[in-house]
Length: 261
Length: 141
Image (cartoon, each protein chain N blue to C red):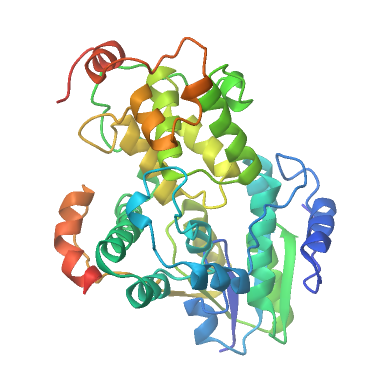
């Protein structure tokens, strides 16, 4: 297998795109388009400097001002201790504590990964409901062509921004695993393909948490939850037969054949 | 015994522990061709990583960035630089463990640095809520 030398003295992001598009030809799954997010340490420090955790209490709302530091933490441009130190210096009160708690999830996932090794890529526990998941991600999901405006918007954002808000990740994972009965591993693989912060520890374990193979019960949502945390972004104009527009009790019965509450 | 630093996908910074411990050592970053042939990865992810890599390599006298078979390229670089040890920072991934093993089998000494940690917790982990109860004071302090 031949090797190719890469140029490291490239002056602009456009020059990097052009160079990599040529040198990595055949080795990437999308068009040769850069993310808006610059991967350099200098850019990472700029993002960290700009982050104050102000408004972090609203982090579950998808228009909230979240840190967007996860990709830099994933790839090492920022270390978890320097991000924590920044938060302790620049944030206060409940927002400071909540941010540090969220940061601890990353540490937790890495400890699980260290403990379980490659087992992290298999079900860590049996699912908590009787289910037979299909192995492959259906094309209509991969193509953002399900006909559900919210789901298709999550796919569009994933593929074009290489980012999804955490709540969108959970909704999408619940849709894929519970509503469409697709194995979480296929969904995780789709996330790893596109998310700048795609990794095994945080992403595979989050999918397992939703699927109930790393939690006591499956995570799922209904339309009311999506409308609330999205500011009614899709629901206000949606005219399709919504699979989420049901009470939690009904959805539990339909999806899992049992109740967990 | 001279060392080189291997920058992998979880250590793309000049402040990476292996890089900081070896400020004058040669350093290498490799896009692993077999991995990219077997796994679907978006171009944007590869550029993001590469921007991190070249930013980390900047300022070092002897560096290399390439596309190839990871282990082979690291071994080739070590030979060219006269290095007998490879230093890298630990992150937990199956590919990384396989690379460490293969480098050792090929005769290089492998020195692994602990990844940066938020807590000193070292017990077993199962649920976040139990973990959080144990580390809350340390994290928020």
